Length: 377
Image (cartoon, rainbow, N blue to C red; front, top):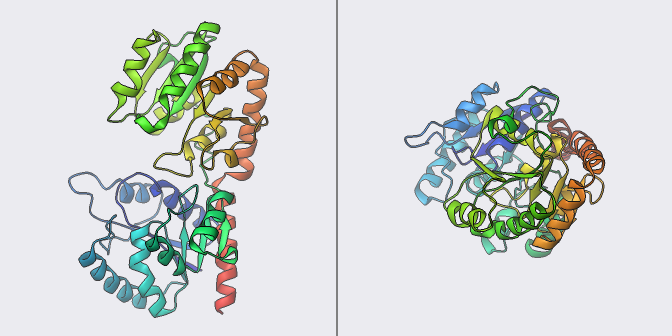
């Protein structure tokens, strides 16, 4: 089974890592999964291409694959892709972003190659005629959630028979609490025995930081051992982060390590006792929640987007309405009962291993490939 994956980007954001990880996991299952991405990273390093090589995949850089619609480069890419497919026959084309889907649709249809699409819109593709037309040209769509699947059926007319719900996945070996990683608590000089609340989100006004810090204000007044780690950066970090922390008198409780990568990021997740996530961001599938769950951390999430489908309320985390008061009650409950928090964390790891592993995702995707190809043949 030969499958060509397309990613119209060169930046290590959004679906880049999930798409690449899926290719790696599919190869372990015997699928010849090739990976094409944009060669143009401007003056920056093409991290997508370099990471692909690091993970054992030589990326195909034969197409422009610009992130956004460009009539000229798209037209040229369609011709290049058609020539490439004639010279390198593939059984399937798997698209991950809108523009690579636009580019591939015509060539796939002309050459009779089935095209499938992964969605990273946790609540479904935004309502637009362009998206409806795009989905009409996909033989199958991998949906990240039940909410997304139902939305795309209702709004875009996508038949359930052309959908499969495949939850987002994380590398449970990388995000393994038993691994030796940098000590985030020591780095930030957090005292032993502290109850650490972590949040991973870009510091923007729409990420509900005001509700989060209101909850922390109430929690700190009740629990003197509470500390907070805010992982992320953004153009509004002074407005939504540092200024409220100063105003609320929480400077000695709230730590801002900024944007973290690699082992430093994993080590910081390990420093958490509980993870808070309030609204989906650029990654609508909320991968950061699954990463913390894999690290054996319970998640307190707001009932927004697909978050309630990731966290099983009162089993591996808590789902609330996202208000400051509701967040405070959930966090206070866990801070006051470490055994409960530990038990939810153990259940979170089990959920991640069972449902959110790369192996589980790849097996589900491969099964759909096989079903499609059986129908073609």
